[in-house]
Every structure is written in C-alpha cells, then in structure tokens.
Image (tube, rainbow, N blue to C red):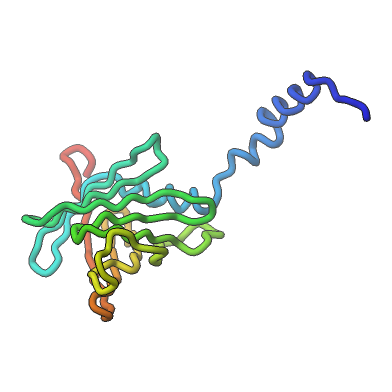
Length: 176
C-alpha cells in the first residue's frame, strides 16, 4: 500500500478550506437560516394578555448560538425560553413559572421559513403529575419587523387549549 506524505494531505485540506469547498462549508443550512430569522427579534417587545402587561426581551447569547426570550408578565414570575439549532431542527426549551420545562422542536427544516415557525412538544421535565399544566407547542409568527404573534398550546387536567399573544417592538429614541 502506498502512503501519501502528510504535507500533501495538509496542503489539499488547506486549499479545500480556502477555495472551492470553503464556499460549500460557508453556506447556511435552512435550520441556521431559520434561527437567523429568530435573531431578528433581539430587543424589547410589549404586549397585553387578558389585561396583564407583558414585556419580552430577546437576547442573543452563548457566542450567538442561543436566543433567550425573557417573558415578564406584570406582577408575575418571569419565564425564559431558549431557542437553539440542532441539526435540521430548531429547539425551544421553555422554563415555565409553573416550574416545568417543555422541550419543543420544529419538524426538519428543509427551506428557510417565510413567516413563522412551529414547535411541537418533544418531552417535558419537572412535572409532578401528568395532569399538571404544561405547554405543548408554540407557533412564532413574525408579522413584520415590529409585530410578533405567539400561539401557545397547552394541556391541563386532560384538556387542551391555546393562548394567543400579540407583541409590538419597542423602539428606543434613535431607531424609529
């Protein structure tokens, strides 16, 4: 068996990463593009649900690999939802004020989304009984750059339901 010198292999690998193959590596996957569309939410949002003011704050964290949503209903505990890419899916883990953690994911993303993303329950942790309140899904709809709709589905004592939230981006003095 003939051996290829190491410098030939290293030279080939270096030329592939700089040239032809480098462009293939740099192309964004559909799931990464979907995550990129979620990162456009970074900033502050306001909404009202059943008379309660709610503030959302989106922050890009973990070297750009996770989007954190902090939901603060007025006079109620804050909740966190973390969005990340996992292969051809996006994941959303919601840290709920009911002290459970629904882990949701999208179907395989084969093309960049045009308007919304649908997350379905994969599993839930932290429940004391199967009848505990827990979210079972989330649809994120970016109506335009300043209007966001969230449709949360849930299960409680064997019954299902849906809550729809509408948010408007808050602009600071200089970016209107």
